[in-house]
Image 1: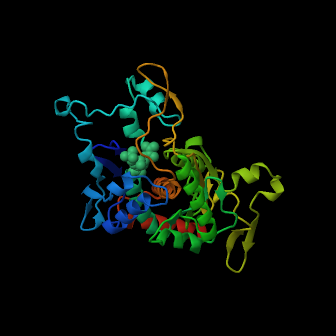
Image 2: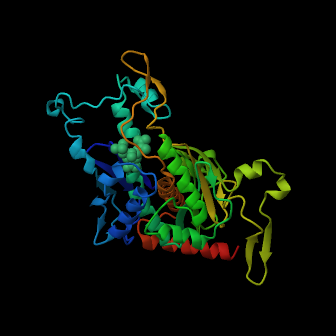
Image 3: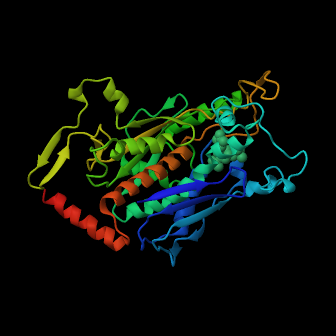
Amino acid sequence: MLRFETAGESHGECLVATLTGLPAGIPISIEYLDRQLWRRQQGYGRGGRMKIEADRVHIISGIRHSQTIGSPVAILIENKDWKNWTASLPVESKDAEPGKDKPIHRPRPGHADLAGAIKYNLAEARYILERASARESAARVAVGALARVFLKQFGIEVLSHVIAVGPVRLERAVTWEEIVAVTEREEILLGCADRDTEQRMKEAVDHAYRTGDTVGGIFEVVARGVPPGLGSHIAWDTRLDGRLAQAIVSIQAVKGVEIGYAEQGALSYGSTVQDTIHYDKPRQEFYRGSNRAGGLEGGISNGQDIFVRGLLKPISTLRRPLESVDLPTREPALAAYERSDVAVVPAAGVIGEAMVALVLAQAFLDKFGGDSLHETRRNFDGYVTQVRNF
Ligand code: EPS
């Protein structure tokens, strides 16, 4: 069973991630992992923290001679900002310096601050913020990159692009090649395949900058090459659509998920929504008239592209803060502000890719198993033959 965990506070020493259950023998390039971390840091509208950090993986275990060896992969990602926080967040009280505490007494609406402080019985929200921060997502992207490399061995690619930022939405369909090109860009503005729309998205971010506001948006993750048969209809927690939905909604600031054209479908008649089934006799292959289901039917992958969207609320830390309450006095007060991002949709897309890759790799290994890549491939090849002969 493939599983991962992350640990780390936003301004602590480092982030930590472990991934357990990858087969041995998967070729790994550190450069590829670092490239995914770099992509997560990009985008127009990111805040001052991204100028401090230059995220890199530091592999502790599980990879030797550029290959997985079957044991848990442990990764550290340094927080360069830690040197500015050592006296504020010491592990032992004896290392604290008077006056260096940075309590959060005025919880930000929309952030975990207040709910977390109440739940953990903390007088202020500093430790809640430290873990709720999207900084944690760097650790997910690192292990997600390993899952992506694993999936690539079987011809499965997972990519993302941005389809809305604030009120500006992409109004045309984009091709797979366009999404590939977005992923390969060296300058990531807002991660939208259509340059004109991207320019209007930038204007929306500029407006938010000017007015002390923030914007959210929508990213889309597309997985190509997924074989039919991952996930299962037999139980609620084996349904791949449900597992993907949880993975996407677990991303910081994501409030909604859409699989295929779910919203459009909900507002239409059934005759116009389902993907008709056809058979190409010479090629001996089933094919579909469309892909509105986003590659999933009955919680099972059907061999078409899987596409999943994450709907991101605007970042809750506002330069022009909203009404809140001062925790010590219970008097009305404006919410805390340190520094923040104004827009993070392309970064959220990269995190979405990581989460989708992790869930697909899990489902893939649930089905095909294998302690070595060789064994997984043998099992997979057998299934491919079975599907061909169906
Ligand atoms: C983030 C690091 C954080 C924020 C952001 C994501 O850095 P800092 O809190 O030091 O400015 O930029 O976190 C949030 C959006 C949030 O709400 O906490 C990162 O590495 O992605």
